[in-house]
Length: 161
Image (cartoon, rainbow, N blue to C red; front, side):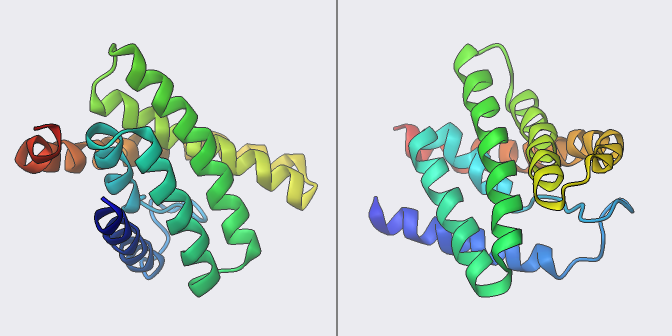
């Protein structure tokens, strides 16, 4: 299990690095597709929330140390933690598919980042970015869910047996 989680952290870091090389996504400053969230959703549905959050937090910290800065770590952690709480709650209700869980995660990731941005930058006008970010969160959440669902369909049973 430890080796699998370590490989998951490494895979998440690679996905984050690839994503960092992409140009601005959807024309909204700072918007990215959230490729590493495919891994997070997959882990949430196979190994549970503890494994998923551990891998995600380690990925964010290590990627931030290697390729980012303290601000990128703060933004990523705030978005990840807010979205993860929402995803856990929705997953536990069993009323939402992987699509609903992932889309809510995408939306609330942006909410968490806007909140920390308003605090760090001390400018509340940043909230004006929220409407396009919410739309992008829905779209990227759908994309993440589509890919995670395909992976779950193909290899998810390995972890559930």
